[in-house]
Structure formats: structure tokens, C-alpha cells
Length: 472
Image (cartoon, rainbow, N blue to C red; front, side, top):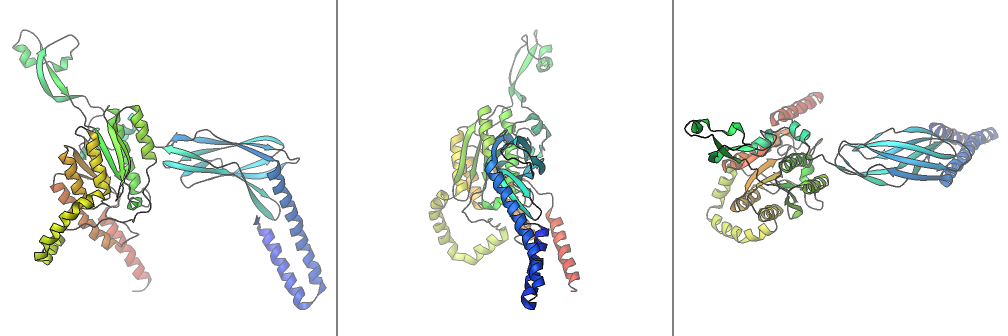
């Protein structure tokens, strides 16, 4: 129950009259007090009767048009209200929804009459995942009071991402795919390659574009070239789900990773090649989907990508970026103790590998692929550069090619440090990336819109403005 402004005013007047009557002893104040108290009591009785009548005589049947739908589609929730009361009851109906579920047609004024009445709302998910659809809120008002009655049970809508759409692939930015040497960077579909295995005589049905006119001029028959098809390697995608992947004001690092994984996996499956997916944390493999092809695999990956979330219960944070200068200074400081420390590190290497989630994930993907494939690691380097390099060595041992996609905000997080510290982190991260690229490792940065120099300038300007306002 909620007091309206008129009820608050009457309550205040009643308190004032009571205080005046108590201190002055005047009966006129007590007599005047009866009026607002009587108005409050009468209206409260009417409000209580309306609420109890609504709860007693109303039966609700809730229907959801679709429990699962593609992201961007619209579902409809319908309420069939069977009211057994004797009088019309004016109400205001609204559908409660989460932050990422847009509701259309709410609120709606409803004059509830005896019999059956139908109320509908449209629901459009704005983000993948599960969205709770609570019961409809029916507001009942009197002159002084307002109350809410929830009609219908709770339900949920699962929003799946769009995957494998030719339009989505054609409209997507293919620069990232080109930099990772992945399919879809230049052509929409793979076809005949530029290398041919042998030549033979022309046969009916051969394309005239494959005729070798130079050889045909020296031969009594037409000669054609048999080109080898440009085959796309299977792709296995590893996504980091460390709690630090939730960084980002608008689109988080995890959402950027899922967007890229959806584009790549859909591109590969459209080309009739195999694609696999796995998520990993700092300590274990969270979920693993072996590489396969076909419509069933596309459905599995779509459901997988739609339900990915960061792990809970693990410490959140990012690994540091050791520079070459820091490594040299550390070696000089340790001096003769560096040798024993290296030996101890080698003895503990096997134990550390068994506890590293990224090493587990890339090892399992390398063993499960069977044939050489392209492994794409989408991360914010939460596992550290050393773990990344060790995992890449393991994949290379089994003949796989590894590409690394670094999520946005890897260098900047305004909630943790100021612009100066973030710029220092950016420089250290750039040196680390140069080190990775120097080892012939393909690294793609899913950079945010704002460059570090712009963030640094904006941060300095904000600090300068604050100093001017404070008169410093």
C-alpha cells in the first residue's frame, strides 16, 4: 500500500491538530481532528475492500508466445483476466521487466469489467541470455491510497544470438578476419584455389575459364587445368570467461568476444567446415563443445554462445605486463640466485600447468581436433603472457595455428586507475604485443572506439577543470 499526496497531507493535518489539542486543551481541535481521521478511515476501508475483491474474484491465465527467440525478435505475453466481481474496477496495468527487455504497450489503462478481458504486451530482448518476465502489475487507486496486485506467475524468455546468416556475414567487418587469416576476409564463399595439380584433355561440362590456351595451341585437343579447391581449416575458438571480462561501460569485453566468436563460427559453418568452442577460467575448462559441422552444430554453438557468462567465485584481476627492461633488471638483481630459481620454477612447471585453465583448454582442443586447425584465443590476457606462450607452444607441437584476439579495455579501466596509470599500462601492453608478434603470433586487437591518447587527454582535461573550480 502506498499513500498518495492527499493522504500525506491529511495525515500531517491530523498530527498538527492533535498536537494543538494536546497543548491547548481546546476541544475544537479534537473536533476538527475527526474530519481528516474519518476521511482516512473511510477511504482505507474502501481501498481494502477493492484489493480483497480483486484478489478473491480474479483468475489469471498467462501465455507467452515464445519462450525462445532470436535476438532482435519480438514475443508477446498475453493475460486472460476472468473477473467475477459485480462492479467495474478501473486499474492501470504494467508489465515488469529487466533492464535488457524492452516492453511495448505498458502501462495500459484497463477498466476491468465482469467476465473475460485480455491484455497483451510485446517483449523485445536487447541482449542475449535469459530474461525474467514477471507477473503483470495491476495498480488500484482510491482517493487517498494506491496499491499493487501482481497477476500471473513468473516466466522467462531466452534470447539467442543470430548466427550463420549470410546477410550478417556479408555486412560484418571483415578486417578482423583478414588479420587473423580466417575465411570470409576477402570472399563470401571459398571455391577453386589458385594452384592446379595437373592438366588433362577438355571434357564436356568443363568450364572454359580453365582452358590452358598456351598448351592447347601446341596440342591437337583442348587442355584444361584441374585446380585444387581452397579448403578452409577447421576452427576452434577459446573464450576467456575470467570475472575481469565483465569490464566495460557499454559493451563488455565478454560481449565483444562473443560477437567475434559468432561471426567466425558462423562463417566457418557456412563454408561446410567444422567449428568448435570452449570457455576457460584461470583454473579450469568451464565448458567444451567439440569441433563438428552441420546444422546441429550451429544450433549447439548458438545455444552455447547465448548462455556464456563469466565465472563466479574466482578472484577478478588481470595479469601484469612485464617489460623487457623489468626482466633485465630482475635478472641483474638476482645474479647468482637466478639459476636455482629457474631450476625450482622448472620443477614446479608441471604442477602449475595442471592448474592452469588456459593450458587445459588449449591442450584439450589440440587433442580433440584430430587434424590441423586454426585455434583462436579471445582473451584480455587474464592468464598472463607466460601461460599464453606455453599454450601456443603446445598447440604448435600438434600442428595447429594459433591466433590471439585481445578484447577492448585491455589497457584502460577508469574505475581502477587514472588516465596516467592507464597510459603506462597501455605502453607496457604494447611492448608485450610487439613481443608476441615478434614470435610470429597473429594478434588482433578488438580496440574500443577511444584511443589511449584521447583518454589521457580527456582525463587530464577533467583534472584541470576540477583544479580550476577549486581555485588551485
